[in-house]
Structure formats: structure tokens, C-alpha cells
Image (spheres, rainbow, N blue to C red):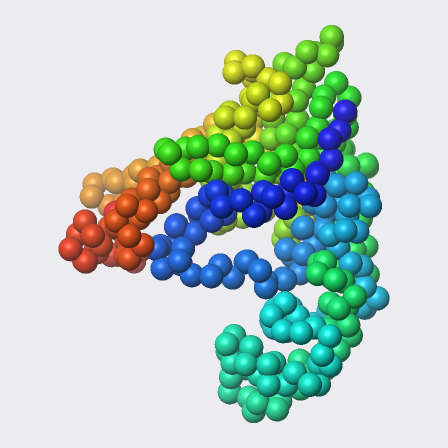
Length: 353
């Protein structure tokens, strides 16, 4: 049995003020970055993110619901990422029914705000935006949906086909034989007194011969612009271990939502990964216990004869402790500065903890 994404519940999830793992991971870069506007929010429309979101939606939603979220345009290609950001902000903030030519002053304001080719003449910068009237018309036709070019849609649909239909490395994850699949089921829980939320792509409940639940797992879908065999590098770079551990914690607090007992077996977390550059090469990755432990508790530095050879990594437990600290003491500066009178020791690899 398959339960597809319920769009309204997902919208409620995004509107809910609880803390998610993406926001929490901003603390890895410090208080200033946490307080800044995340460049991944609102106006960012990089191709890799758009295709990944389209693949997720093609798999997790019913077909009709997909087209409530995405508008497939006639565009053969799209502007640069920065120009798309500028035009979408223009669309969201100003009257989209005005002619683009009548919005030159507004365009220039956004160009200045984003420091878009700030050494160029004003007219040159504005004209670069005006050159993309077809994309502007697509934004208007989309009525707030995410705009896909025909090429992007075809690529996302090809990836969907490989993942769930044909490829031996991944298709078994998407069958509903002897299991129940929940796509993008919002999970809410408390951790150290903090309201948290998670939105796993898939929660899969496995059934025994008589239909009784015997185990459960979480699967996350990832697309990458690199080779899928290189995904472990991305896992470390983007700290997907934190995501995996955070989602498992959310699942443990919500087992009753899936009619599961507290002693049900929780299987290892999976990432199903496909490349946008070489589609047809998907891999299913299973996270071992060490990855989950580091994602939750982090790890301490390894020091040999006074030399740090392996630097510490924070897990989500550490980050939530930091979050609680800043909630109580104020979001002013890194707590290490508070504890060390504003002084930090560094070496070639960074700050010495």
C-alpha cells in the first residue's frame, strides 16, 4: 500500500515554526550565519535544486498534484541562477502584471541589493534582465508554481523512471509488496524541550506473512550533479549524517502515527542517489551505525602526541544544545567567544576546540 504526499499537510509543515534539520545545520557555520537569510531560502532557484525537487515530487505525489506544484514551460533554456533569483524576487515583491519594461527602477534596486555585476553600468545590468522576457512570462503563467523548462521536466521524469521502474540498484525500494510506503509524512517531536519537525521522503513499514508490522525504515532521495559513487563525499560535506540521525529521532517519537510499537525494529537509514549528469547510475546507500552516532552525538577530536589529526564534528544533539544556549543568552556571538573572553586559538586547519 502506498500513501502519497498530501500537499496541504506539507504546506502546513513548512508554515510550522518548529526547528528542522536544515535550519539547525546553519549553526555549524556560526551565529551570524544562522541569523542571516539563508541563500537556499525563498529566491534561490539553482538548477540542481529544482531538478531534485521535481524528482521528489514526481515520485512522492500523485500526477495531478505534481502539476499543482510545478509549471512546465515552453522554455528551451532558462536564465542564469542569479537572473532567475532577481526575476523571481521581482515577481513576488512587485506587481507581476506590470510590463517588465516599466519596472526598470525596481529591477535596478534588486540588482544593487544582490550586487549583480555592480561594476557594470546600470543600463547594461537592467538590459540583461530585460533580455529574458520569456522567463518573466513563464513566471506569470505559473501563478506561483515552480517553473520547469521542458528539458528539466524530461530529465526529472527520466530519473524517476530509472529509480522506481527499471534499475536493479533502486527499484525494489519503491514496490509496495509486503510493505506500506508513506511519502513525505510530516513528523513533529520535542528534543531537549525544543519543538522540532522532519519531513522524510519515505517511511517504509515492512510486514510479515500475516500483514503484521515487523520493521520500519526511512529513505531519503538525493540527486547530485556528480557521479553517484562520489556521494559519500557529499554526505560529509553537507552533513547528511545529521539529517539521517535527526529523522530517525523524529521517527522514534512518532511510531504510533504508523501504528507501530516502541520495540519495532528500525532498519538502517537509506539514501537513494541519482546523478543529474549521468542518469541511469543510481545507488542505494545504507548508513551504518557510526554515521548515525556522529550525526546525533558528533565526535571528539583525535589528538596524537599533542597534534590534532581528526577534528571534532558536532551532531544534532550538540547543535540543539547550542540552540538552547543562544535562546537563553541571546543570539549575539559564538558561545566559544563567551567562554574564552573573545579569544580563539587557531591553526592551519581552523579553530582549535
